[in-house]
Structures are given as C-alpha cells and as structure tokens.
Length: 227
Image (cartoon, rainbow, N blue to C red):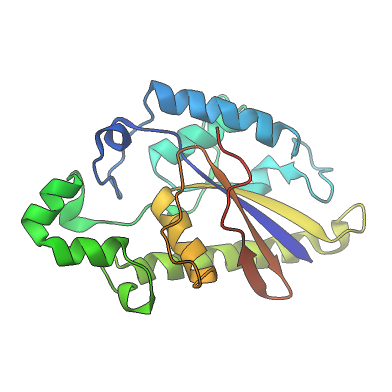
C-alpha cells in the first residue's frame, strides 16, 4: 500500500506576524490566518468524502484527518475541511510545534541577546552537526524529527491494518491530511533531503506532500499548494 501524507501548516497568528518564536504556546489564528485556512478549502475539496465508502485516494474525515493538538492547527483543519467545530478532529500531540522552552515568545534579536549568536546559528543551520540544537529547556531539532517520523509511520500502519483489502479501486493508494506547524515540516523535509544547502521555507497555509511506499518515506522540497 502506498500512503500520501499531506502536511499543511496552520494559518498566520499574531505571533507569526510579530516575528515571535511560537513553539508550544497556544496562539490562535489572526484574521489573515483565517483567510489562509479558507484558501486551503479549494485544495482539499477535491479529495474529501465524508462517508464510510471513501475510496482510494479520498479522505474519510474521521480516519484520515489528523491534527496537532494546538488551537491554531485545529482551527486551520476545521476551516479547511468545512467542519463546524474542531472538537471532534483527531489529535496527535506528536504533530505539535517544537517546544522551545525559554525561547518561546521571543524574537530573533531577543534570542541572540539572551542566548548568544551561536545557538541561533545552530538553530537555523543545516547539516548533521545542527540536529542537536535546542534552546534552554526546549526540544532539539532531532527530537521533533523523530517524533514526527514515528507519528507518520504509526498512522500508515494503523490505516493499513484497519483498511486492509477495503481499498475500493485497487490502486493501493491512501491519503492522510495532517494539520501541523512550520518547524516540524521543515525538520522532516531536511531529514529526507540532506543535500539541501539552504533552509526550506514553509509558509503559513502551505501543503507539502510526503510519500511512504515500501517502507521508504520521501518528500519534495517545493510545496504542492500555497495560499
């Protein structure tokens, strides 16, 4: 069975607009973020099927839509999939943004002042030596990469075991949509694309495609949708 994971970043928040490090702080969408979530509807509308008979390549919402447990991701998912309330959306905290510890709520200038230029350079840097970068009392980039990868693999195994031969058109393709965060998507992309020499930009409301086939997870650098 082939799985396609559509990881989409939440819409803009006031902290995004102000350049603050958001991390696990639970900041809601601002008016721009709400519009970005609405723009996602057009992309996902072509995939959604609401009933038990969802076929290959379609989303059955109760099974195939997963979100970070942070409000901004849940809001984005509910709007993108035309749900009146995000209370029933399936949540997996492994898809939440990096816990940044004492860095949360600070902008770049404040971070450098408090923690030094080197920790910032490691944080934004690429390469094997930067995966252990973290802010005081926060997660490392490797921590986020590993929990997100594990979550994706678990979703694929679960869907495979629950669907089995129920894929209706014989293609063996299943799709899963995940409402998540920019830092997490970036960690996954750079782990799968180690040859990339510049940071990958993950804008608010963008969608990136990850494919799992024969136990191998792959991804493209470019988003497949931006609002």
